Image (cartoon, rainbow, N blue to C red; front, side, top):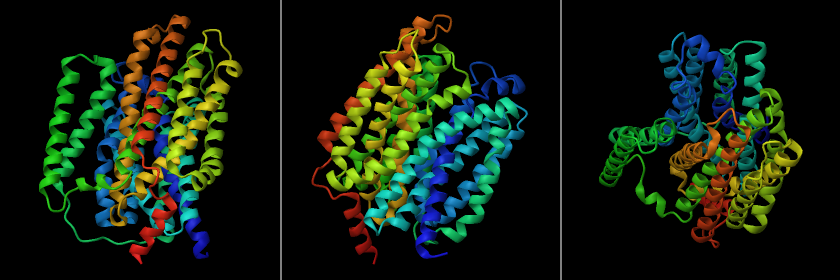
Length: 475
């Protein structure tokens, strides 16, 4: 295998990692009622089959990025797949609520190792060649919506025709393949000297985990409840302790001055708000298709295919060319603005609507916006950091997107419920609730476009030029 083809095979494995990490958040949706019946979940606790994964994933991403920098991205990438394998086997074999939730958290921890190390490996493979870096990021980015849609499809098929444990078992052969292929395809990199900031790791994991926990739990227990505000206060205290530790340590988990890098903070804010707008849209569009238009799980997944295909084509074909011509800032601003327009259009859904009139055109506009904004904001966030901090930068941007997704979904859940989305027996009320969620998500996207227009620097180097500078420093 030539060096060139080996790199693209490696990119395929990296894209597979992104595909799997996202698929594991969506594949369980259709299986939840069967799991509830078999394992004895209460209605209040059933959402934690999803949330346990998200809390562990979001809380451990920064640690995963730091471990990648210290011990080598390839080692951490392999360890993540092994942890995902173990968690998937345990989730499928679980015979109680406690075991199922612990297994899902283990899957999330594995994903938190895989995601930042995968991006670091991508930069190691393609960072020195500017045009190929943009293409590689496009393929990596396109794997996310593909994973989300595939999860809905596979979850429906497996639950209907096999049995719910196989939504977890399907990960096992893929993880084994990844573990076996990684040594042959991925650059070895190398561990570098440095100490692991254990206190920093504990406080940031506790802080982020508590914040995500409070956010995803708030719609259920109430945003004004003592539990919500107590957990949020604990998260603030833990994160404040983390910042104090980082400022005092010689070798911190996260060098605070990394945010002085041009565009790094601005690009992470763009990713956070992009996740906060996009995930609620995807979630409530699925509910509208099933609960209002009456689609079953499989046709609902099929209805999302045009949007997914457009995102993949946009990320792979359109975004790289547009970045080369206009630079990242115009793409981020335009993409978020177009996403806001698509969400505003989706807010016009009707109780007696149709897929062709109410869903397809508006969802395609939203998908176009996502495809334009995601790659340039992701590439800018990663490329703005020093090469030796690639894992940290990857952990930060993954954390931004995941925390934004959790915050946006929780907030829009509250908005939707306050406008009637909890009245399952009333299609008009349901539609009003989902429409309100689309409007709220659209406002988030519009705010994101405004912030990006103000904070992103037009004169900053494009990702490919940044890659050239990194290559010069490395060599």
